[in-house]
Image 1 (cartoon, rainbow, N blue to C red):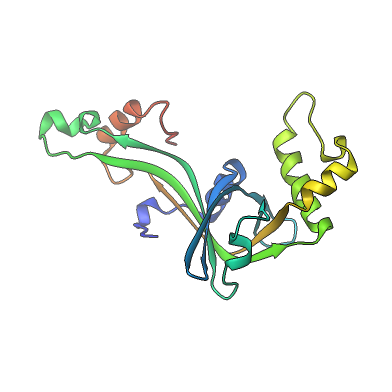
Image 2 (image 1 turned 120 degrees about the vertical axis):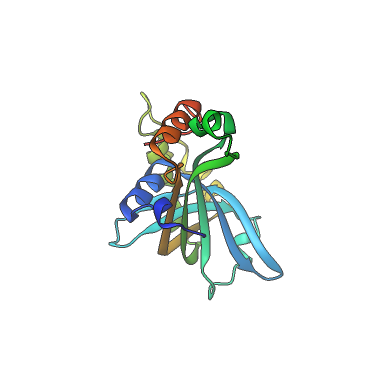
Length: 196
């Protein structure tokens, strides 16, 4: 990803995005070209490295056709928005402004692994469920459903693990503009994109 130094996120900030944004687009090179799948991915640091775990329908060809010798890429979008020229303080002073787009994105590159064994898939599904149900007053648990029903559903999916080897975070939030422009852009984007 093109990365001017003033837009580069520190690794811990990029990991923070992965903690908050659990939906990504997974891109892999496969037989016949690129494969692309939107899916929830959960950050897993429990093994001493960085992994992203999720699952796809068994009918999805992504898990069968990706080339394991070539890194895959998970793209997380943490918000974006159009920046109107009217929001620049410089517009009134010089008129020398153009529109742009501000955004926060994290790209996770790494080796993709398919998980087909039932225990491994159950672990992934349970962890994803616990993450997303955890804040509810009465969280649903995988064990709440009948075991035979869960077993049948597990047969219809395949787990995925992206072993992250490189993490790139980019926060293009008008840091290259002067203080006055940043203030008016921040006001214009209020509620559209969180700008620290």
